[in-house]
Amino acid sequence: MTDPKQTSTWRARLPLIAVIVIAAIGAFALRDYLSFEALRENREALLAFRDENYLLTALAFVTAYIAIVAFSLPGATPATLTGGFLFGLFPGALFNVLGATIGAVLIFLAVRTGLGKGLAAKIDASDGRVKRMTQAIRDNGASVLFSMRLVPVLPFFVANIIPALIGVRTSVFALTTFFGIIPGGIVYTWVGVGLGEVFARGETPNLGIIFEPHILGPLLGLAALSFLPTLVKSIRKEPKA
Image (tube, rainbow, N blue to C red; front, side, top):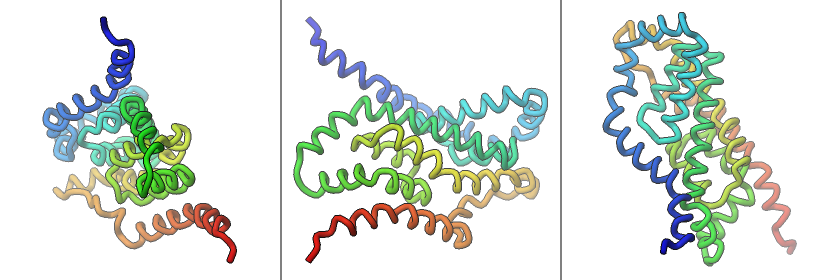
C-alpha cells in the first residue's frame, strides 16, 4: 500500500522537478533562440507583428518573460532589452518588471513547496552560525532582499531560491522583488530602446552599463538607505553598558 505521506511529498516536489527538467532542456534547446543574434535576425518581423497585433504581442512577451524567469531559461537579459526595443521605455520597463516578478514568485513557490519548508525546519532546529544568519535575514527580510535586488551581485535565479529555502514570506519576497528590480529594469530597458541603432552599426549592446559609476553609485546609495532600518534596530537592541 502506498504511503500517503510519501505521495504527498512527491506531489509537493512536482513543481520543482518540472522547473529542473524544463531548465535543463531549455539550456540546450533554446540557447540559440533566446539570444541577441536571434533578435537581430528577426527584429523587422517582430516590429511588423507588434504594429499589427500590439496587445497580443505585449501579452505574448510578458508570458514568455515569466516562463524564462520561472524556469531559469537562458535569455533573461536579451528579453529585457527586447522589452525596450519593442515597447519603448514605457510600457517596456513595466512589462519587464511584471514578467520578472511573476516568474520569480513562481520559482520561489516551487522551491519553497518542494524543499523550503523542510529545510527551514531543519535550520530552525540547528544551532550555530547558519541559524543566526538565516534568522537575521528573516528579521530584516525586506531591507536585505530589497538591497539584493537593487545591486545585482547575485545571479537573479539564486536571489529567487535563497529566500524560499529560509522561509521568507511570499508577500515580502514579491514586493521587494518588484520594487527592487525597477531601477535596473529601467536601465536595461533604456538600453533596449536604442537596440535598433546598435544592430544597424553591427555592434552589441553594453550589458555592463549597470556597473558604470554614474549608475552603480545611485543604486549603492539606495541599497545603503534600505539598510538603515536594520542598522537602527540593531543599535536599539545593543545592551547598555
